[in-house]
Image (cartoon, rainbow, N blue to C red; front, side, top):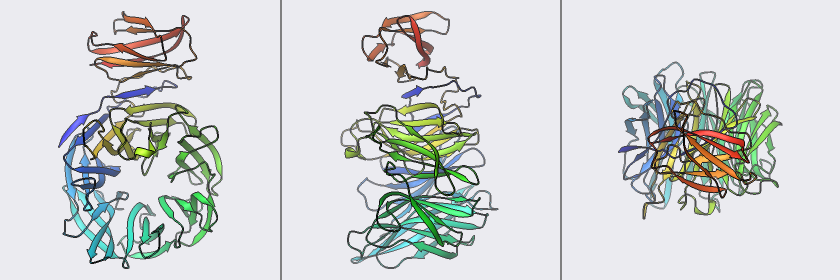
Length: 502
């Protein structure tokens, strides 16, 4: 397995954020099998633990769950595969939870499928592992009725003693196989104490859950038919700690996907999802702050270009770190080709302040099709993302590889302070770092744009007019190093930044 550095990065800055930069990394791990990372957590020593599943090919019905250590420099550590058996599938799909009062012990949630004739028998599987060395401590299985499929989605621990697991279920005896959700309560010994399940012919696809301590309620987000049938969309359902249904609320119809939930305070929470509005008819991202009665207090609509699709990423696309809120997504998505898109996309990282005002945003990737799945805060005030990527340039390739992206609180990979751009996004320069050429995109509202490239001695090494909004500038003749670019329009400065020539 080979770790490869990803260098294609775009940085779009609204304001300069003066925080001491830490080192980051952007790697992917190429193998000859199909691998997807789904969840992550940071270990006490600064390393990361990711979980997901793998198979020989993307069409292989037999999948095995895994957990893998990623060191804090981006290199791979040890990997642990779930037990192998002849007619079984065991995939770790849900959160990685550290066991209370057991440092270094973690819980993983997955499922197993054993097939007998025409009938399927599924089991929920909860594993306990340790990280030193990475190994299983125990696995507990829970049998389900015949032909009832289950896949864990999210889990939380409350009061260091109660575990709540949100799962997707499908009853294969019902016509159309509509997805439903199941919420289960366990004690610390993994004894099942209570559960709540939706039923019926209408699909309800679960996504996330959180606990609001201010009113002692558990909130579940799902997409589909409302609890009382009549509307379809993004919904919030509230339960008490004994899983009694309290109430439910449908979110505005511009929420068009499942929604990530994030604790904000004892009385507020944050929600983020893909959206469509009259002003933004293509897919973009909405991030909102709600009170514990599920009323929207304020919100921000995130859009880079109105004609390019932007989608909220994976299973968790929002994290709170160092008093900032980070929202992630995928830019340049083609839903008709998912997941084997024949063009590149970019990983979007949007940095917001606690009031959901945009500080800046960044794009990473552009050399493959990336699907970010999980975004978590890190101990240095930054974030860590993982997911999978598909290299559409390889002929006949239909397999995924895991990627990881670690950013500091300034969303920096290099540890070099960035120079801010003007707020109207006058100029984009990428890739960064670059070797042979850079692409320069100028906001079309500026007349007679002019670009200057300056080395670290203050010498202008290149300058030219930009004759279109989309320009290519050769840089193969420049020496490796850090360069400043400055853009002007009719001799008035409109933006500046830096790029790295390697």
